[in-house]
Length: 212
Image (cartoon, rainbow, N blue to C red; front, side, top):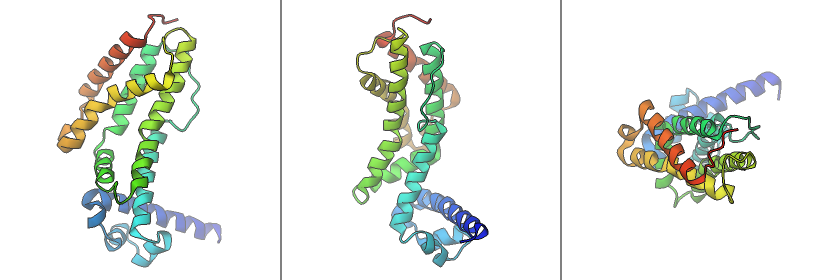
């Protein structure tokens, strides 16, 4: 395959995935069709099938691409080098970033859709959990090890502490958005207030008061 042909194929695939993301989020898995994806992408149905053998395969790719994209935006796939910021500053910025990136209409619709199809596609539930909460908890655990070594956190199990922080942060906003739809998504001011309170409660339990 020439470089030009490879580029055209890549662009065609990107158009299909973008169109499929919109179609699945709008209609759900059962309501979507390969014809509707092809029409939205501006390609033939044969082109869609040349990239994805079935609607199921396309659905799985869309879910994994969207959840992986959020993880990349949060740099959860990157082995982070932690600086000398006080732990309170680190946690506050991390909380703001995580809420801002995750609490969006598209990702909450994706979450609802995957939950609705988890019996049909159990691997998707595992993928969403692995690319979402587990990566966030892993990144936090690495940070907590760093800050424990600096004496700013008193933690015996970084993963356990990271799990507590993650769900204190994400539990209520996610539940609200899942049940109330877009109207339940937090505003920037609500994100700021919730992040600050989560950090305050966490440091009351695990902080040492040291900032050096």
